[in-house]
Length: 105
Image (cartoon, rainbow, N blue to C red; front, side, top):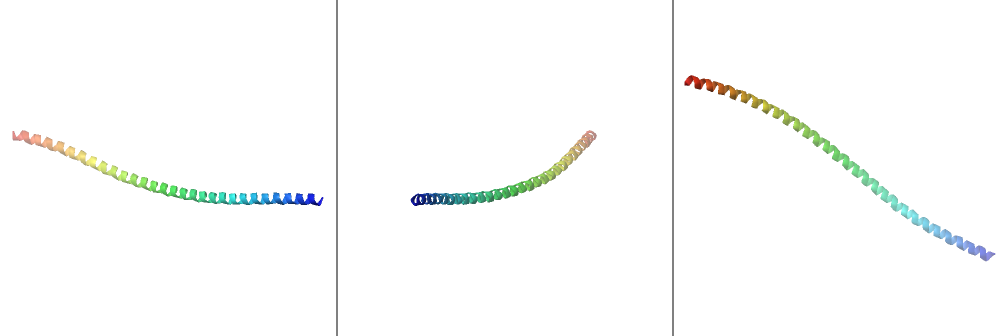
């Protein structure tokens, strides 16, 4: 009976040893996975921050382009007004020249 109990104890000790080894392996695997998770979380945070900075830079760039476009549109409008005035002046001068040419003849 004692021998049977010793064999059972030895078997239980071997089982405990196997469970302890498996537990240690799983703890190590968990630790590795946890570290990978932390690394990926930091990488995600950094990526999100970078994306936010790029988005803000793009917003500022677009705002600057819109302001520049507004200025160019104003400039174009002014130039078109000047061109219209010059065309009217040219037409007036042609009329005057035509009148002067007629008087000269």
